[in-house]
Amino acid sequence: MAPEPKDQPKHGRPDPNPDAVPPGTPGAGENICRRCAGTGKADGAPCPDCGGTGRVVTPVGGG
Image (cartoon, rainbow, N blue to C red; front, side, top):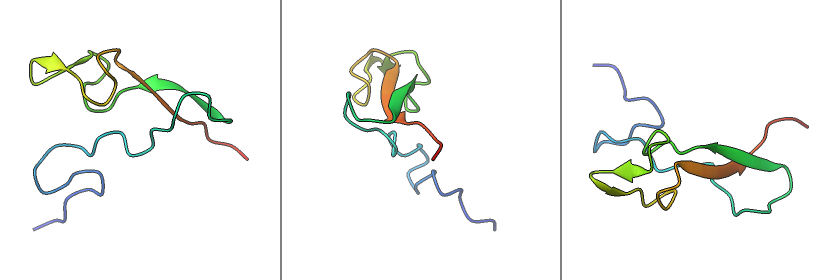
């Protein structure tokens, strides 16, 4: 059996935005929330990772 991808824990759901950083962090930008795929809803309720906005702040590559 093949191992699960790194971002897929054993419970079958992707890890909640492992790269999220606080707003205002230098070198960060807005991105679509992984948990809700930008919908703002998870399991019929506002997404706990993005607060229902569908967006999170993550580091921007480069350097």
